[in-house]
Image (cartoon, rainbow, N blue to C red; front, side, top):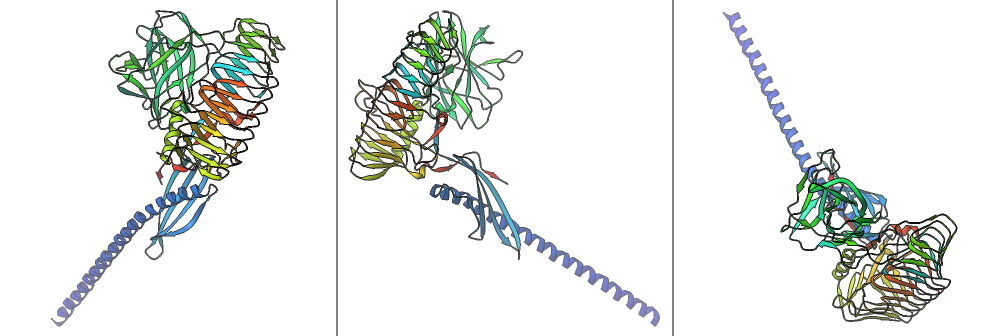
Length: 584
């Protein structure tokens, strides 16, 4: 019995040891599990802290870029519970990529990290000055020994005795009023944001048999979409056909976030028949964040849209309204006479000129042509101006947001910094003064730069230019003129692309912009008025309704003007690009 009792006692001891081991193992497991949970919770908290640190790095980078355009980033900057590191990579002069990583140390040495990527851009508007000189319906004249180092295009007559080193184009005339159109709207029609709306079209029936020379549409853009394709097609049983009569393009740069009328750049003229149905069609790339809206009147359903207009059997759906558009037919026969052309010349009628390259004409040609001659060639359609009213309105809004000066602003023998700013009166700079521009300036009156003054763009603008606008909306025929005196110097800050753009919205008699001897070296734009430049004046580019070049005046066009940026924000500020924020 004693042996049996000892055996039972042994069993109990073994059982107790096993039970204790199990308890200890379970307890250790529970402790380990708790530790894992605590560590996971600590990691979650640390990662939650790291994300705001990365966001702070992005904000810090934008602030530093606006202080120093050469800012390249920073490493392990302490902030709150951790650190952030920022890298900056330049895409081009107006775009940079930012990568910011926030780090938090926890649990005795572990590191939690979050990374954010974003894109920032200089707050600016793009403009494309394709020609050295571009004039509108008022035409263009050149004095003796005047020179354009570049190309020239006019939507009116060209005459004189000067010389153009590049090509010269006199476009077909366009009527002053549209033959067909609609300009009332009560709805938006978005397209290009989904696959089923890549093409939109509006029916029209001309009243005259004549050449289609100009097409305008009322659009706004959402985001930054690409250019639109414009096509005129025939009718197919009440819908657009796949027969394209003429093509063109609508520049995205001319369209703003607010509705504006934009001219298409047609590839050629087209003879339309009175009473026949045609369709004006716009074709867009598809991007959910970057697309267009066409102003529409729901009271007159005559527009259509399609997923793919050139499919084997395209389906066209009613848009529910009529789109705002304008079509112009015919116009005056414009002529080219007198001047010397270094390159190719194009005009309906050419006389008494000298052409170094080929000549394309429609009705007659008495010029001396060194290259080949191509008769019975219709003049090309009018070219849209490089800056739209919507772009000008955006600069004016940015200027007004920077503050308003009540009354005239006079700088007499002083140095000052200005912009963004609206001047509710005249701007006068005189007596060897220097004016440094840090953003757009809107002069709601006349602008006078007297003799020997200097107008400069501030270094903070970087590679972007800025605009000075003389615009008196109360009456554009009374004020909004610019007078640039002798030896007035207007220039950028020395960096590529840093160019001043002077805009006059004056539409009255006389000159909108008057440039005196040795006046300046910049870009001038007067869409509704006349620019006259006097002897020995040099400019980069001119565009106006009418332009007169006096003896010995010179335009030195630069190829880089085909794509230049002008700031809308204060000091050309770097700003976050919507839609570019990514957490990795």
